[in-house]
Image (cartoon, rainbow, N blue to C red; front, side, top):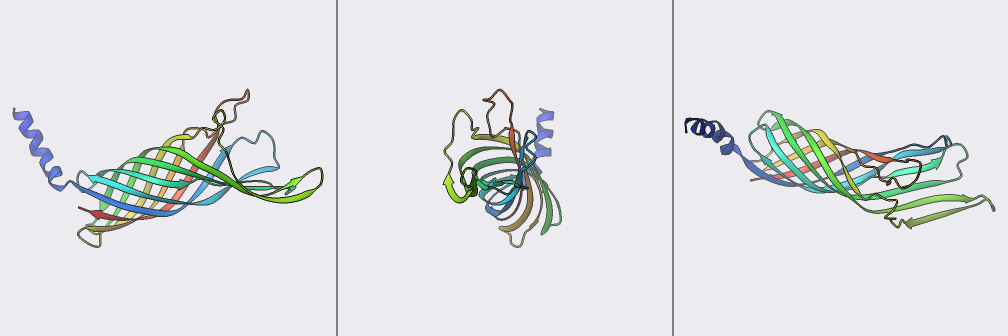
Length: 218
């Protein structure tokens, strides 16, 4: 009984501070596509910019620790081209729905605080498209294209999972309102291509996002 009483004495200050907050975020991301070119030195995969938008919620246990969850629409784009011959350029646009779940640690004063987020995320590849130009090697005719890509259930892995983390600053400008800016990093642990061939050919996304957010604190 004495131990139970001591536990409540220690936890009550945290429960007194505990509060919910909800908000929205948005920004730009820069995706790096990781792939083995298998000695095709002329082929180059380049990073591309995209957009990220989402809604977020956080439960602050005390003034330095909280649990944060988001539902984000995030693009993971890249470019495929030939660097020497320059016969083609494919700009891929990939839209993902992601659910990051992170622990949030904060530090600093009452108004201006730094924070660090660390955790995991799950995602789903919504759709994909590409545009650019290519060359018909028989006629040497260059043609432009813009098209949606149909998913192949044998080849494409639409589920995603990985690590998520970020560093940022928060400014509490009102009792119930706070603004944040964060540099976020997503590292995918699941290949976008299934192991369906004799030669293993895994492909991963590594995404850096710079986003701003607005919170309403209850």
